[in-house]
Image (cartoon, rainbow, N blue to C red; front, top):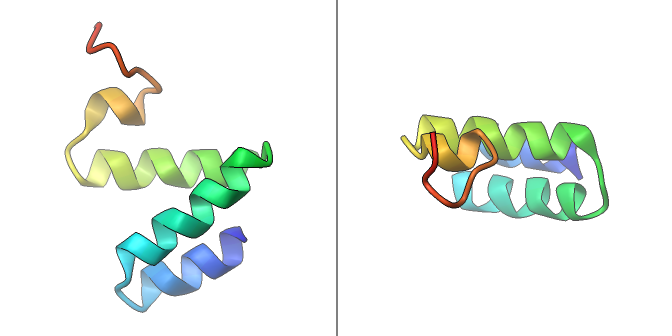
Length: 57
């Protein structure tokens, strides 16, 4: 799933990449979780990238 996400990302389809990474993360795959964080950081969502959803520092 993470490899499919990478292929989608490299093709410019960030939404599809996020979907594949999320599927992997939902199954406990650390690389999927990491890649979701990378996408969040690239989108400027630092709290999500850090694993925070409450806005705390």
